[in-house]
Length: 207
Image (cartoon, rainbow, N blue to C red; front, side, top):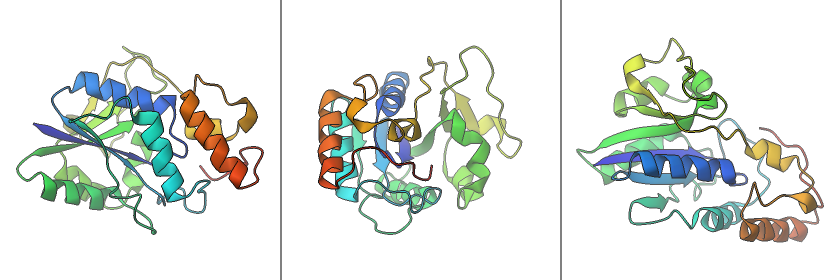
């Protein structure tokens, strides 16, 4: 059995995240997948639009069709008021699953900045592999692997691309959010949260 970690701000969760979850679930049907939203990302400090509770509820709503005995929404990072780091969450996973291989799931857009992650060399020592889901580079075109990453540690999947990001969605006038990006019930919940804040649109925030 292998344990897979998929973390992110999920601010908001959307079709692109569902695409990653579906791709991983199909590619690794016997693995345990931990989906781990954070509240304060080391790369997006000061950019939170929703509260931690709201992010958690949005994730539950958007991802509920995937959650199962093998796919979990994990609150390890969202419950922390301070910055969360992947290296710490991976250590916790290794305690929860001793003697089990742990791998890191990420979109191809995160590869080039992986050396900026806290303790990235320690992460490489801890994990079995980095599983890369294609975002913009269609198969079979090769995705360049940065020199600081051992080729043997990186597995690039052959999934179809779906280049949509939370940043793009946050920049769309919220009354016109389309259901292609969000499930209808997620859109409804998001608009409820935004209306309670008196916000009629997604202001540009750090990404």
